[in-house]
Image (cartoon, rainbow, N blue to C red):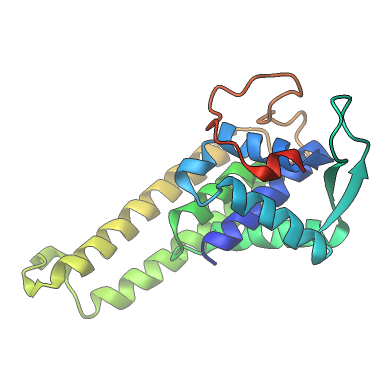
Length: 216
């Protein structure tokens, strides 16, 4: 699961938070979260994902009346039952899969509170186990303590991967500890954190880039 799945998760999650949303709102949310900097959530990718997932039955497209300023009718999207299943499947897979690009994990963390607290912890513990199993396999052939020079400069590649895995495991253990300690509001625990902009609220992080899809 690489970039495209991150986009799917981000778009499904953003639409789901609104109930119904048009493409420009989804784009605005993702820019508000900085996803255009840490993932491939660029306007073209967002609008393409919306149309593609509507064709696949994950989103329901509603044509709504044109704005008072005129122009074509705008399309609002709503997550279907199939889309909800896909959303939670992507979310859970992204939390466990340690060997993916950073955008996949970042996207999942953005929606982790949609899960019950215990389930989130269980998935993150699986992530740590997967990292530790990978590390054990690698260190059967490569001993990080002996330094990268043992394999010539190619050893730096192994060093990078082991270092990244160790950092990833340490970060995940810290997150587990915070969640187990009562941090954040998870599913079923009360009013969730509101991470989207109100209809008339200006986005201080908007890229300002104009895209034809903004008018759809």
